[in-house]
Amino acid sequence: MIEELIRKNRSYRRFYQDVPVGMETLRELVNLARLSPSAANLQPLKYILSCDAETNALIFPHTRWAGYLKDWPGPAEGERPAAYIIILGDTTITKSFGCDHGIAAQSIMLGATERGLGGCMIGSIDRDGLRQALHIPDHFEILLILALGKPKEQVVIEQVGPDGDIRYYRDQDGVHHVPKRALEDLIVELKR
Image (cartoon, rainbow, N blue to C red):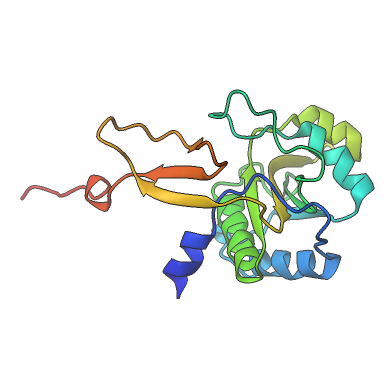
């Protein structure tokens, strides 16, 4: 059921780094993105796949993790992603990527969740540093990094409290809590 898959598809930020995610799995996930809708069917997205420790080590320092968790610098060695998919926009096809990369990322993450993996969509990226580290050609715009692996943390969804605070947090047991607004608060009723 799609709702169950979406509920399991959380932003995981700690992984069993030693549990591998193979290149064939990454290719299968990108194929899900390939089959997803694209504005004007331009299909301008390209992907860098990484599942080896050396390339992963080049990518990791250019990622920024969990802005609301001010005292947490990101996953420690041993809890880092086992794989990454970097989503690029090919500016030789178009200069504007609209929401294509969001659609592609969600397709990839749902596919990963279905395979028992977890991940995190990372938009806070040191793009210049990553471009230099991986020698990414200038005609590619770096849009998102998807960090993937076997989750090493529990993430729970809860209702936003009466104070309206939507910031995620970790409790004393390390459980990651994600407040979500109530459905009634999202639907705009039109007056007639």
